[in-house]
Length: 280
Image (cartoon, one colour):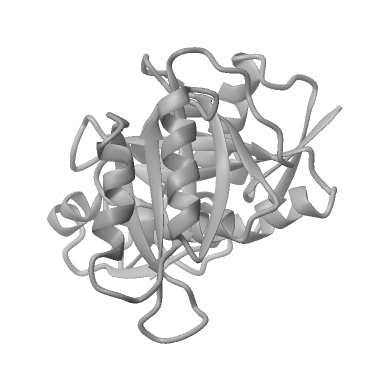
């Protein structure tokens, strides 16, 4: 039995990603471990309470999921695989609800993907953030809010009535999820992605020189983000995804050169990148 931690409760899009990874045979015979946030999911792996954790890391509309990147930057885990899922919401209420929608809930990242729809249909509604979209559905069931946007499965779990389906401001919205485990390098496939987090001396030109280590070797960066180190005001770490595997000679050489310049560097894994869209 493979224990997989994910942002709970059951009925989240992250749970759907767990099932997608299982469908792809990354793991089988799954025991679900719902947790409160991405940091708790990563910590469950570090502590040995879970074999894997699944995290949402990037949405095509709202960008990076910063909580997940912060959890990965703590180290002790590595990314083993990714999956790319379409995201569309169901809007749900308690059965027979006929009153006004004055309090509307979802996860803040999810809300960014539907706020235009909410403004059009429920202009009086106050947004109440939830720890996950499924938790927003639970809030409806408990009478804490009037409506929620969540995966359709959440309505089934909490006995709610769905009043709108396929809700999204952009119909092509997608989210990339990753599966993480304790450090282990996934085999090279020739269509891979590698991720590292690093900090640099606070001096002019250090970031340019660091990035040039990739450019000069023809290594393509597919993402770069800066995040506060949370150690001292004004200090930042840089998180980058690059196309290629650690065992590719140009990637290995670029990372070795980067390590010589960086104050710290955390390797987050090399894994097969998504080359075709997954559906749920």
